Image 1: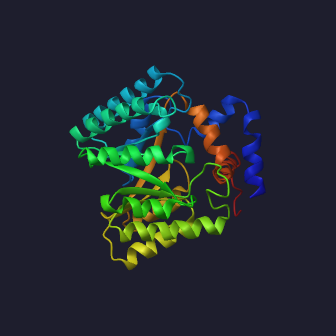
Image 2: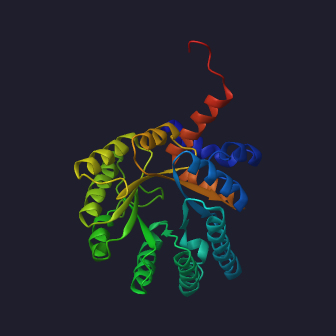
Image 3: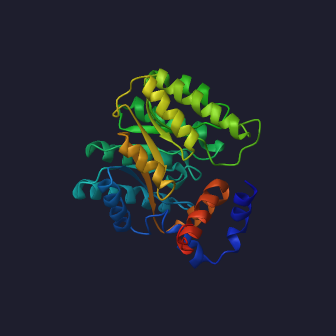
Length: 306
């Protein structure tokens, strides 16, 4: 929508404290303690969680290693506090843009620590310049015998169905999402309905391949299609899950839980909250619209009978 895009464009002019106020419902906070508090609340609502340590502007090897270390702290805390949560990792936060081997070493250390603790790591997907490396790293971990790791595929990329075919031998655990990065038409579908249609095709292809799928969307039509597809296939609730961002379309998520579906909530935290907020809101104007509407609803009380 034009309004959503307008909101996203003006965000850089919004004072940082106000951005923080808008973002606080959608980001757990700056500390691991903040994230754990949110995860406890999410778990109490019958939902699973995935924690992400924000790291949007990594420019030095030491920063990448520090984020890898932060994930080890996350796993230790999840285990100690008995939280129902795994983690999601962006490879650029582990140094992918600095040095491939640095990223590989950091990623393997995190995945091995998770395996030792009986936990799971989701390799997040970023812009298309990182896709080949992300899939290569994922395959390398699986070849090393590490099965506690999954990948993300983006429905708007034209290559995604081919990637699903190429990964089928691994029966991978995959989060399928629309994708938020701005990509050229030769790489990504541009039309709203085109992306929706490819999302459904990708979901069907993944399930055909025997994958465990995280259906990650706030699109009510796609949620309905996901429910229809898993129902038609007779899948049990332990064979798939839905996934949503913290604080977005909560009523829809609550309905899924009441219906008996597994729902995982993405819980980001860290000092890089501002960069994450700006990127997320600017690259996905629809979410900017969700947040603006939600903030307005909370700031302006409803009139009686309204």
